[in-house]
Amino acid sequence: MSVSIDQVFVKQFEADVHLAYQQMGTKLRASVRNKSGVVGASTTFQKVGKGIASTKSRHGIVPVMNLNHEPVECTLVDYYAGDWVDALDELKTNVDERRVVAAAGAYALGRKTDELIIGAMGNATTNVGNYTSAFSKTMILDAIETLNAKDVPDDGRRFAVVGVKQWNTLLTLDEFVSADYVGDTPLTTGFESKKWLGITWLLYNGLPLSGTNRDCFIYHASSVGHACGQEVKTDISWHGERAAHFISNSMSQGAVLIDNDGIVRIKCKEQ
Image 1 (cartoon, one colour):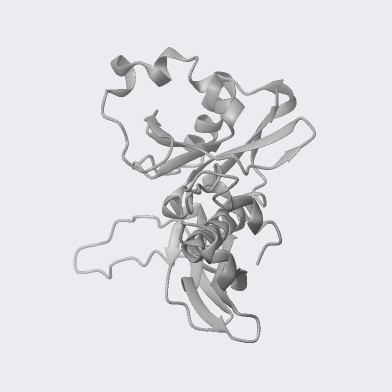
Image 2 (cartoon, rainbow, N blue to C red):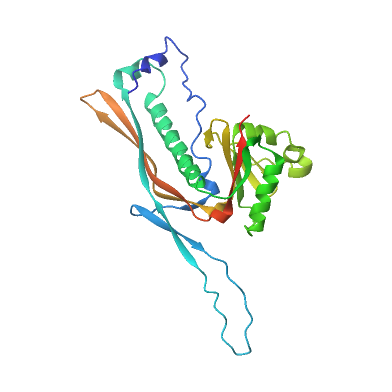
């Protein structure tokens, strides 16, 4: 286990140990296309082209759309997060140390899920804005215009993921915060989110940042795929030779960009 376990002994700290400001699981998985129960090292998402409707003569044969099917492969990767809990250290605390470590591992894997999804989004090639200007309403409208021009469905499954500073910018817009525009019914998703312009806006701290160059994304749920071979699983085992429990968390997941037309990267300056 961590050599710093003595820092939580009751003689030094309060009894209740809180995981400090950790993201509670995944935020983004529900916002993309999902495939669970995958068997094997990879799976395929089908990207289907647009169909064209045509007329037919009386008693004639119904015209075939000949939809283009383009398979997109998603590779699964195994991830682990574990730690030791010494039996005698547990006697020196009045908290369930095993439960704390198990939860910390599960949250770490939840964050990894979001990292995989953001990594797939990073392959998008459609951009608006630049890294010399701060996040703005103009960038948002440009991104929405781009999606509309590509006939991306406005069916309630559009999402946007932004950083803390960009979220604060949104909070300065009356259209974003006023019930006159967005209603007064809060979203009950368990984390910071809001519906505006037909888009579900999500606050996420793990977006790409290089110096002052920040990437945000507006996308349709079907443009990114997430595949899962094994959900987050926790195993606790006793090791007598170490006189300690080992808490092991694991999962097998992957993410891939399916349709570049359905996602727009917003390049902005972090200020």
